[in-house]
Structure formats: C-alpha cells, structure tokens
Amino acid sequence: MSKTLTFALMDPPFENARSTTAMRLIDLAVKRGLNVNVFAYEGAVYLPFAKQAQHPNAVHGRSLEEENHPLPRAWIAAVMKEAAAKGAKLDWVNCGLCVDERGAGEAIEGVRRGSPADFWKFAEGSDNTLVIGTK
Amino acid sequence: MKVLNIVEAAYRGTLEEQDDPIIWICSAMKGANADIDVLLRGNAVNYAIKAQDASGLSFGGQEQTQPPKIADDLVRLKGKGVKIYVVDDALRERGIEPGELIDGLDFVARSKLARLFGGYDQVWHW
Amino acid sequence: MAKFLLIESRDPFDNNVVARQYDLAVNLVKEGNEVTLFLVQNGVLPARPGAHSALLTATARSGVEVLADDFSLRERGIADNRLVEGVKAASLSVIVDQLANGRKVIWH
Image 1 (cartoon, rainbow over the protein chains, first blue to last red):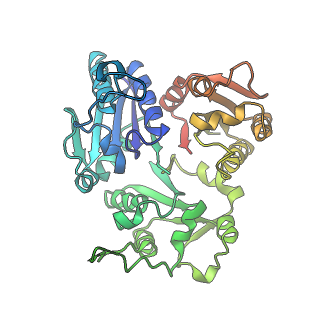
Image 2: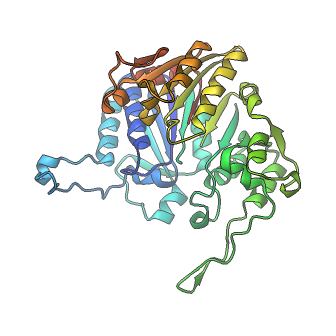
Image 3: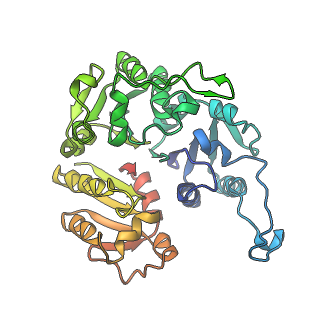
C-alpha cells in the first residue's frame, strides 16, 4: 500500500517562496505515487481559489497568452489529475473558518472544506506530516 | 502520536484574527483529542505575559469588541492538559521578568531543545 | 537514535535566528541522532562562500549532513561546484524521500 504524506500550509499565493516550494514537494510526492493530504490554513485557502485569472504583461510586452501567468489553482488541478492517473490521491482541505473570513469560498473542484479536526485526522493517518508555517 | 507545536512568529495577524492562529488551532486540535504540547520561542515568548492588552481599536467608528487575549488562551490551553514550554533564554534576552508571566509554564533552555524534541513523535514549527 | 530533517528556508544575513537552527542541528547530533539540514529558498545563500558560510561548514563538521536545493542554488546563480566545504547540492526529492521514511521533519 502506498504511503501518505500530510502537508499543512499557511501562505497565500503570490506573496513568498514558501507556497511554490510546497507545491514542488507535493508534485514530487505525487510523482512518486504517494498519497498526499493538504490542510490549507489561513491565507493558503486562496491557493485553490477558482477566480484566479491570468493577465498580460505590458512591462515585458507580452500578451495574455505569451505571459502564460502561473495560477496556483491550475497547478493544484494538474497535480490532482496526475495523482488520479497514478491511482493515488491529493486530498485538499481548506480550513472552513479561514475560507469564511476571507470570502474564499469558490475553490476549484476537488477541494473540500474542513476544520483542524480534519488536519489532526490527516496527521494521525499519515506516514508523516510537514507543517510549513508562515512568518 | 505526540506532537510538539512550535510558535515563533508573534502578533502576526492577531488583531484581525482576534487570536493567535497557532494557539487557536492547537486549542481546536486539543478539542479533537490531539496529544499535543506547545513551545513558545523567539518573539512568541511574549505571549506568556499577563499584561498584554490589545483593546481599544476602532476604525471609522467601528470598534473591535473581542480583542485577542492570548495569555488567557494559553492558560485555557494549559487547563486542557497541554504543556506550554517557553525558551527561557528568549525571555531573558527580551528583558521579561518571571513575575510578568502566567503561571504553569515549563521553562526550557535553548541548549536543551534538542533533547525536548527527541521526546515527541513529531515536531511542527508553525 | 532518531533521524531528523531540518529544512531551513531562511538565511543568516536577514535573520539572526538562523544560526540557532544550525546549532539545533548540531545539538541533535550530540544527542545521538542522525540529522540532515536541507537548505531551500534563501536558506541556500550562505552556501556561497561569504560572511556566514563558516557557520555551515562548522555545522557539517559537527556531523550534520548539509544539503542545498539545486533549484534554489541555480535560481540564485550559485554554482554547485562553488559551494562552501561541507555543503552538497541535492534534489528537493530528498525531502520527500526522508518524509516518506518517517524522519522527524521541522521546517524553519
């Protein structure tokens, strides 16, 4: 049976390097066929926010298509798809109260709402847990 | 599974959240029967000071009615059976006197953190 | 004996607590544990020979395996054949593997 890792994240997208490093780790874990749980706490509930949108970049003279701006919600969706293709799972839970206070209710498909009790359950049921706190 | 939760960043978003988010999540996890303890290090050792008072904020006449009371939250967490460790070097460096602190804390020297960590299955640094 | 993975994302140029994390790694070794210190993001900056590099070399000499994320190094233009003594470039997959193998892991 495949091993399972749990990650707790706190950072919103586009603000610092931690969210990208976290996605690199999650992507690597899925590529190795591991099951991954993510508990998104605080600003991290914006990582799978459905309304993220690309934009052009006039400073570089790039159109919307040329700029192809990264969207964490698209990364997450792609990693979820890759997990499914490998028979593994990326189970993403957004902390519900964090979602409410931020108005971040519209998340991509496959993301569910939960609570700290879910995070503890994830951790207890995993082979290991990595908490990436914010600063 | 026994987990030590480290809180180092202090007063980050605590006014908007009316809580320290890590002390809060520890309380919530304890409510779900998690076997956890807390370590305050760095600026977060300030959370153990009784005299913290964040009351009185108002924006455009809209007053904050539930300012954070982090020391009280630690006392409550302690009451639920969670050990609250504090790095005593960090207290001294910040000029914090023992009499300023809430009761029931467990003090640990920075040099002894490695031994403390060895006693837990996992250590989560928030 | 336990196995620890300390992930250091911050650098000693901007953060004076980072040196304490290196000390923690050394103290964990002194307690009889096996320890990897994995540098990521700006945490790789002292791997380039400079003002704070001696801290990393001393950490490695104390028995800590010190690794630096190869992507973070490249992102910052730090050639992996120019790292200070004791630091080796490594893939981020080391973190995933050590997590999967049950190491106690702490992110700073």
